[in-house]
Image (cartoon, rainbow, N blue to C red; front, side, top):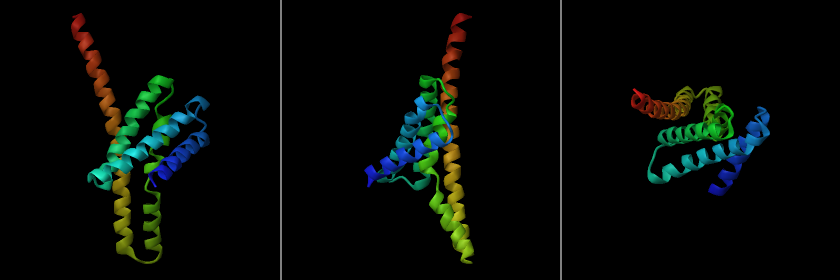
Length: 150
């Protein structure tokens, strides 16, 4: 089951890269970012983590990996971060939420919509956290050099 999820996340992230015309030399790296994000997301619940924490950590890992790949391959990190979070997007949860509203089950619809928004917030927070960590690390590294020259 995990192998199937890895393959499908690699395919979906790679397809997203192709769809949005990222440079050909970076397509596999975008797929790899998605697959690694899925692996982190799938592994953390085995350690007892909840879905929101798993999503947050997976998005942060994808963000850090995207920053690293952007430095190595000299392209914007957006190429990798957008493709990397595709396997994390709660599409089925959003679908079930809308289906509950259509079937006049408003309590279930609101419950599922709230869960969907919380997962989406965890993805956004994880992406911001990853970018912030790298920015702070770079700033601290350069701050140390500035003080040495004075």
